[in-house]
Amino acid sequence: MGISFLALGGAREVGASAHLLVVDGVRLLVDCGLRPGLLGEAALPRLDLLTEPPDAVLLTHAHLDHVGALPLLRRRFPGVPVFATRPTLRLALEVLLDSARLQAALGGGLYGEREAARSLLGAVEVRPLEPFEVKGLRILPLPAGHLLGAVGYRVEGKEGSAVHLGDYSLTATPTVEGAFLPGERVPVDLVVSEATYGDTFLPARKEQVRGFLEAVGGVLRAGGRVLLPTFALGRAQDLLFHLLEAMRTGLLPRVPVVLDGLVRTITRAYEEDLLDYLPQGLRNLKSQSRMPLFLREGVVEVRHGRHRAALLPERGPMVVLASSGMLLGGPSPLWARHVLEEETSALFLVGYQDEESPGRRLLELKQGDELLLPLNGEWVPVRVAARVERFYLSAHADRAGLLNLLARYPARLTLLVHGEMAPLHALAKALAYRPTRIPEVGEWVELPLEAPAPSPPAPSSSAPKAPRKVPTLSVPVRVEARKGLLLLHLPPRTDPTSLLPPGDYRLKGERVGRVRLTLTPSETGPPPANREALLEEALAYGARKRGRPPRAHRVVWREEGLERALADLPRTHRARLEEMREVLLALLEGGEGVVFLLFGRERPLVLPL
Image (cartoon, rainbow, N blue to C red; front, side, top):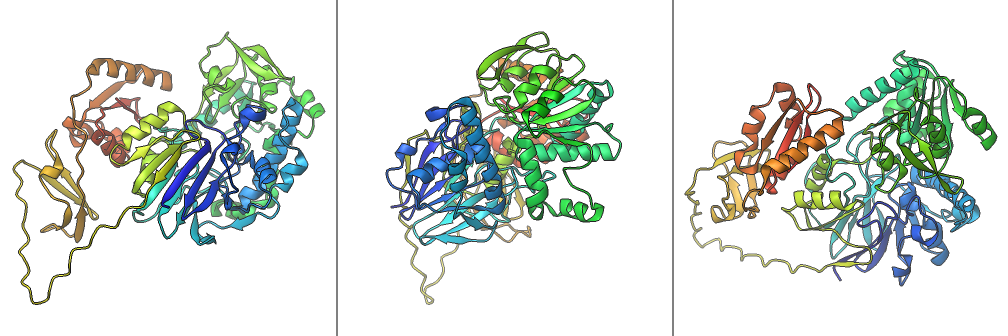
């Protein structure tokens, strides 16, 4: 039987994630979400492709694009068991109820509130890093960062193993630790990974938080309002905690902080029901300070439309956190209509923006342009006079994080999902050293069983052992050993398999023990035809991304070597790039050039060429 994979949604797109994973003939549906911003059938994954009920549904986390279609699945297959962590079940309830209300208000109802609540009845709670079984399969939930309660799943059967990583982030935030990184490489047959930021190296989160708070402070001290359209789950609570702590310590002036829409509901769930699942540092703060973590003095909860109507025209410094994060619905477009027309105010975007969302379009406009916002079932033009800026506080791993975690799971096949086409292809190119595919919705991917390689006969104890032949290299090569990893630095366009056969080696004079050397031919070929054009494009992109041109740049191609490129950089930049060494090596070995854009003392911006 082997292992099979079928995407019902969430492939070559961000939205409607629903992936059928078949191991040992057991059918596991990983997530069942909607496409945010769409109504009716257009929002749904291809549930019609399920010709028979899945044996289990594994929920990775509670975002709408991962749980929003669960009531329809349970309507069709009432007895299918659902597995999820406790925070995911608690947050998914609020998300589904809000989705039902929003659909009803927009006239595209797929299910009602009663059915939304009933879809989670009987769900089985799982705990991170505590295995459970489904029809003989051993399933291990893996902490994924990203959101409180988020997990991926490692599935082990008699005929193969698979890892579905879900949405993940290696960066800790105030409300969630980073994703679980196994201490050793864990070989599996199949890996399914997101690729949301597969083409982007995000700035350091600490620097972004500092810049975000400085920007908020500047607007508030000038008497303006700050609107933060934000994802209600996780992102809003992280932002709220940063804001409240900055006000408590005097970094920001104390002003009202307004919570509107699903942001208010989810924040109350964090405060009242999910404190035991927050990181230890937050729990310690709660017990020591004896004050609320989120719903402190000065936080205003918008409880109904009349309350919002009274707040919308108010002038004076305040911060508003409102769903949705891409200005697609909820109360954030209502606030944006007022705030965007105020020259002293600001709208800061703090997360992923779908390419068709109003939030993405807003980033492409300049002051004085008009933005179409979805208001009361119509698209209404709004003049942009306020300050608009984007801060990268994403809960998704960037290109470096994706490559880092995937390196821990060497696989016979890697499938990339949950991304637009540009990041999907960019990440696939960086993973050219391992079999990688970008599946389509409705496409079955079969991973047949591999026949085990025949074992060599055990040598007879009486037979003399043949002396081991030591290969002689005909070209100069530098060998570097690092914790059991053997790195060979070869001349350009040299095929390593023509020099050394794979096998076990012990390095004389190196205290690394025995290492396994696996060599595969690297992609070789002519350099890009027009390097100057590529560099000009990268410099222009870097200037747009940071809002100013870089002070300097350094380009390195595969044949030039990473060591020499880093040695030529200032010490501050070199230290920051050393943290990305493995990622940079993967980029260069994949046949790409890399440009380091240097903006003063900030973290360099790294762009593949």
